[in-house]
Length: 246
Ligand code: ADE
Image (cartoon, rainbow, N blue to C red; front, side, top):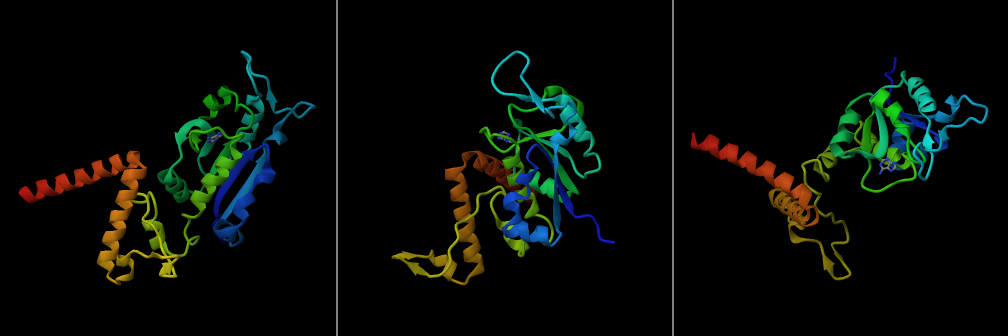
């Protein structure tokens, strides 16, 4: 018996958008190898009227259309067999980040509910209580591109998908810092040299240079990440000093 692979179930009005770009590169190879699976299910299959309508005009007026609660609820009910948390993609949600990708990747899969138009009727969200997640502070035309991006972030964390586990541990966000810059051959290109420590062969020097570069990039580019990192570091140092003083 083979265990069921990590599975993304996507409730969408546009099932043809999946796997889309995830059929290529690292995620695509992993999909072919059966390391994960994606199943896109058409929300419209749950429409009940003769026009197969899934949306209607908003009460109170305003632009756009709202997805009907009865249709969305039926689609969610029919996905009860699928593994993982129910996630509703919306700019009103909690910001997606590496920690959430890691949490989802550690589970059996995720169920994404993708809205189109102005979103879904609030009552179905109140009833189903999905985790509401945003890709960032901008508005997409629907949840599908956000689901594709979040899936990419999860899939590359699944066991066996990426070759070197070391490169996962060292990359941006894993330690609260942006990553250090990378260089490859040629050692001199258009008059630009590779930083000397990287050519030294001394692992301790290389590590120290990379750490300093990562810290500098984080401090100057992402003051928000830097304050969190610096606070955590100071706390560790304080605890260490207290221990030493005792
Ligand atoms: N749907 C529309 N905009 C979105 C965003 N920023 N994140 C997630 N889902 C969305």
